[in-house]
Length: 504
Image (cartoon, rainbow, N blue to C red; front, side):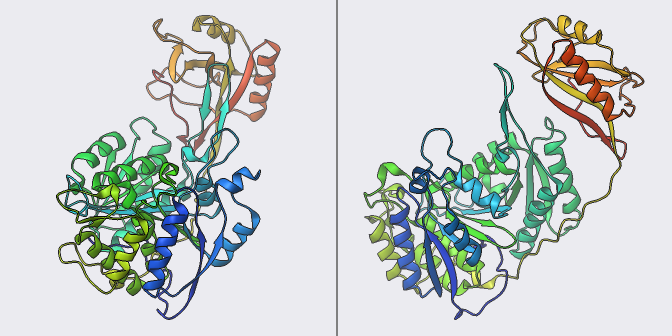
């Protein structure tokens, strides 16, 4: 276990300098575990001053659909560091995810989750695992852009940007460099999503070449997830996009023993937020049995971030010693290992009693030996030549025969544009589709220039004018077609910027 913090401190400050942090007690078990953690921080003489804010369930229920008010935003902006307990999002429509709102609004581009096995004190089949998952935190499907387009079909837009990819991938390599990690693994699904995940993978390979001293490799996310659950010792640092990272970070934490033990950091250019990765557990709220370890580990990462690494080491070593001494909360209690089952406050008392001690079997925390700060350069956009070469027109049509809609669209003559193909749910159904393909009421119809060569192995697209697209849409409307959406087809520096249809 290498004891890497979530991020190197932005600046090495004097241990005696007071840092003001924002505290959000959260919902469910949040207030209980926050109280325990703050007691430990105070006993360890963490040099912090706290300012509390209210976010989460009660703010939602007051009529604020975002779960956070202007006063809380101002406190976070002023202090730049927030320690947040889990929050509850009320059931029902209209409530936005506060976690997603915080991460995106504050520019917290990197979610960093270090997870190490604590064998044998926390049960795991993999006593040697030690992984850091670095997850892109702002985009991907979590952009939350969804639409109902027809009676049958809803869509969610997957947004992957080059700036987002460059920031998170470089952060992963800089993290590995700063904390003597040996390997960075990229997990993607670019065998299917060739443009979105393909961009992430391309950027990974570009940036990996700048760090020849660090081993790098890539895996498809499905087999990577399976291996994380069966041979996690093979991994060191993992970098991936938002949704995949959300899933595999929980896999890693649970494989190590318990999601309830892990803390995480959300790092941005100006603000950092630290939190447990588990939920608010309303079913045990008020019972005073919750394990505060996840939030405590988040607080340890926070102390490392603000430069109070010696205090962070003191607390982490006391926590490790508490686990070694068999003082455990109910969620990790083992009859053959644990010595005493305790609640939230008693566990905090046990950690406080062991401040100044170091573990005998688990690796001693050495965060104070951090090697410097991580810097991410500003994104520099490259100029490209962008050329419109066609349009995908999405049509709501209730028929079932692709030949019928295809034949009708072939007869629509509009300003030197022709129908190239029709797909339904991504499968080519016209021309020459298979009769077995099930079709919904959502038809993607690709129109290109009459001069485009579409029969060759690699189709050659000819430039079109935007006015041709407008005229086509007008013609389709006049012929009774319900156009629900369009996507322009572009080439960038002569390279196709859109996927080919299956069979195209």
